[in-house]
Length: 106
Image 1 (tube, rainbow, N blue to C red):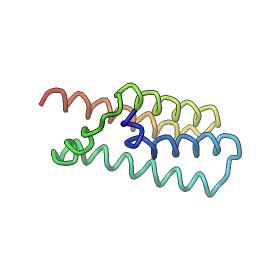
Image 2 (cartoon, rainbow, N blue to C red):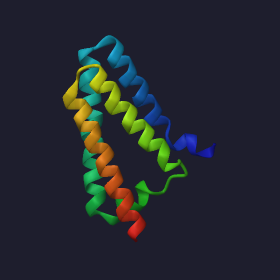
Image 3 (cartoon, rainbow, N blue to C red):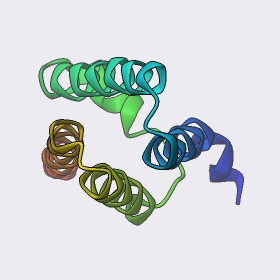
Image 4 (spheres, helix red, strand yellow):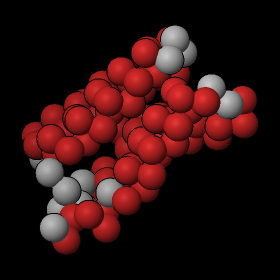
């Protein structure tokens, strides 16, 4: 369970996403867009910068946990009828799979 410290931010963001789905708050939506954009940027950069890829892969958290987080996040956004954010989280999920496969090749 030492890996929980590696994923606390992911859990907090998932709670914010659930809160957004319940309240549909504009401020919360902006915060989630900014976080999502930064996450996508970091995933894209890690494809091209090996040091970022090593740092991203340096976690003890099970890979399945991240798949569950990304699937839940996309699903909650689709449930809340925010298809753009849901699609953005599907992109995050796809980039994570690509990063994972490229890390396994090395």
